[in-house]
Length: 234
Ligand SMILES: Cc1cc2nc3c(=O)[nH]c(=O)nc-3n(C[C@H](O)[C@H](O)[C@H](O)COP(=O)(O)O)c2cc1C
Image (cartoon, rainbow, N blue to C red; front, side, top):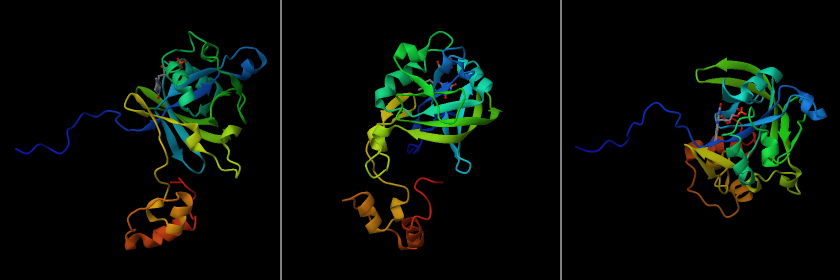
């Protein structure tokens, strides 16, 4: 008998790759003046953008995490992107609790006030961070889903090119693939590249060749090439 093309492995969280982020949180802003409300970092892989207008993301956090109470108390968080230089810290913040250890201190990292927020710390060493206000908490089971509005995005000066664009490649962002950390590698396409005109393709990715687009998709290709939808907007 012929072997089946697929083998079932059960109803698991087998969605990958995912980003891993360092979520900054604190009960209040006291830490900024040397007072209470110690800042904390928690590693989160159950995260993703879930709305464009307003810009929103979700982070899923187990109720037993120290950070869970901080998120509820302040209604704020930062979502700090993780590049390879932060890989060790990202793993450490995912296995140590803020109940037991000051993760900033232990790792030699620095908490800074986040743009537009009162309490949640941003990570000074992150390539970029998103300042978020929590709008809804949805209990799902093992995790509570915090739905948060992105109020501001701050990108480290070092990642701006001279023309003002942002060099994400230089951030060396890390992804999470079923329990393992992976480098994201080099750019191999862009939003709409499958239907972009040759001129756009050569401007965005010089030297790239691809099979001729299917004529039936030509209309969509023209819309993308004229920039009707910003890159990556879904
Ligand atoms: C790669 C990675 C991803 C993780 N993702 C999540 C997650 O999405 N949600 C969660 O509740 N815990 C997640 N954890 C576990 C927490 O980060 C971990 O329990 C942490 O020590 C909690 O810190 P806290 O007690 O200071 O809040 C993850 C850990 C790692 C290493």
